[in-house]
Length: 511
Image (cartoon, rainbow, N blue to C red; front, top):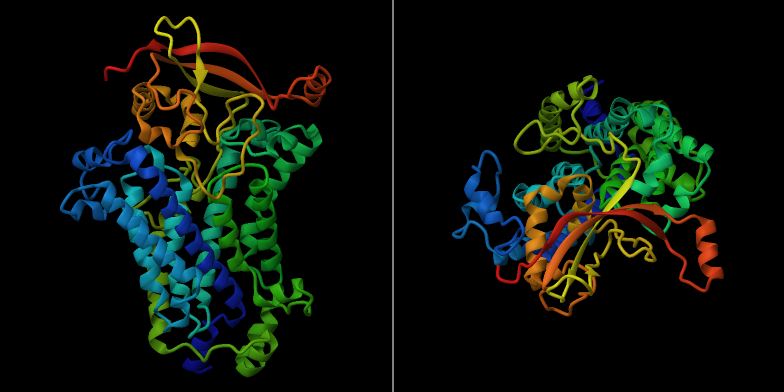
């Protein structure tokens, strides 16, 4: 076997569709993430935000939080933030439209790396509001998928395998965190609570929660099977790898339709597509059943033109030597960076959503290592009555549960950062600086933060007093909803009880 044949085997011409999905899909998620920052970052972390980024930059070093905002004339300004977001959205749109992919092999790389650096600079100073696994997932994927190349070359096999390993880190890591973290995952009762206690339920969450116990046990068992076994099957020949990827995608879609998890599920779906061949996609659409990977490999060794004909498309010419060497060097570097993540997967002290280097490459992932069995919600209330005896009204959030007759909205893959953190506040984070700053801004009638909430109960006026109470929430049963209808009342979506004051009434108008 000559060198040219060996290099030809490093091409994966049967993954052109997967490359399109990965590159355009992650570009679309970048566009959403930059739009999200445009809309929310100034109120949360901007010049007049709850946790000002300029203060964070002054208290940290470039080694602790690398960001391009450190090298601007002004360390941070809302204007510069919006310039970064605008540039990021433009770059993302070019990939969604396929412009860099129409260029030379290397063309997508600088576009994705620039998107990565721009969003990394935002995330690095995002503090509590950006401290979630889907930020790292988007950034690491964005760093990688540009190296799938343009249409001028076939998708590199090593990059396809690297992205499958990325899927293993995400899915298997999440599965092991669950098994090690909470007994309810081991005794198959976790899903008895999850749909009701998840951070931001959607319209189908209640229906999912009210399913019978045997259904929830099946959900939990199915989650374990897919997360702990299916990712490893991605390294088996086709069509096994494609079926494994499909199983991952189906379970992620089940999460999409029953909750709001920003772009976490969609990013995982995109990564799983690295396991699906073009032949499998065509079979789904009515084509012939895909051949086994070993048969395809043999045909490429004996006669590459036969493999191209079997794939049913005009494959690009064999990748040039410089491109093959670049991919080999890049994947080798990534393998070194992934050693810590590999160790973490099999460590009894497994870390969840952890970084092992300052650039956030080769991370540990996972979610819901512990399961909340009871839902608590914080209601922030104000009144125009200085005596506090009457007129208390609750501030309405766009996504989180509040008024008991309102069902959860569909938000994802967009992300309501303040609403999401309110879930953590109800778990005990209401003593954190961001929550106290939120109370102060609402108490003074700050218009910037009010734009992140629903309709203003005081039409722009500052309340005379503001307070915070905690409630226990659960879904209304079908019987409770029917009884309300029979009584001529609006059927409740939630039932809340056990009110307790966590912040006594205070007048903040003079602040």
